[in-house]
Length: 183
Ligand SMILES: [Zn+2]
Image (cartoon, rainbow, N blue to C red; front, side, top):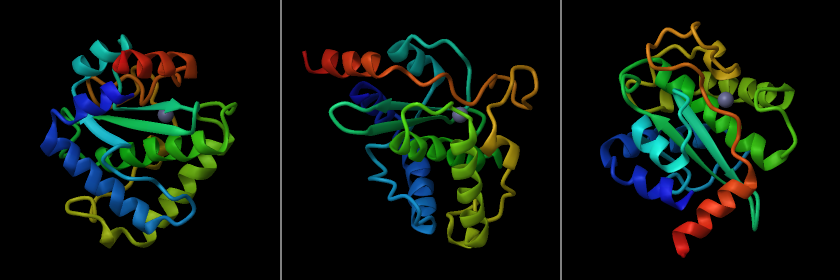
C-alpha cells in the first residue's frame, strides 16, 4: 500500500484533483469519517498499478485494503480518459463506498447489500449538496449504475475499463506488500 501511495505521488496534478474531490465528498457526507485524503486516494496509470500489484485487469478504480494492524485503505483512480468525464465523480463515489464498507465488515461481498446501502447513501448526500463539489463535478450527473455496481466486461462505455475494481486484495498480500517496502 505504501508503494501505491508513493506511485500516486508521481501524479501530483491528477492525484491532487481526485484528493480535492474526495475531501469535498467527505465534507458533505457525515456517516463515515473518511480519513486524510493524501494517504487514502490517488491517481496512476494502469501500467503503474499493474507493476505494483501484478493485477492485469483493466478498470476505472480500485480500493486496496489492509486490516492488520488496523484498518487502512488506499483508493487508486485510473485517471486516463476519465478525468474530464462525468463518470469520474461516480467512480470516486464508488471507491469511497468500498472504503467505508471495508471499515464496517471484512466478510461482505465487494458489491453486495452493504456496499449498495453505503453507495446509495453517498449518492443521496452528494446530490443534496453537489454545489459544494469542485468544478466541474458540481454540475455533472451522477451515474448511479456506475456507483452501485461493478461494470461488467463489454458493457462499459469506456474502451479500457472492463470492471470498476478487482476482487479485494487479501490482507496477507497487502501485509506482504507493506513489509517489502520496509525491508
Ligand atoms: Zn467496486
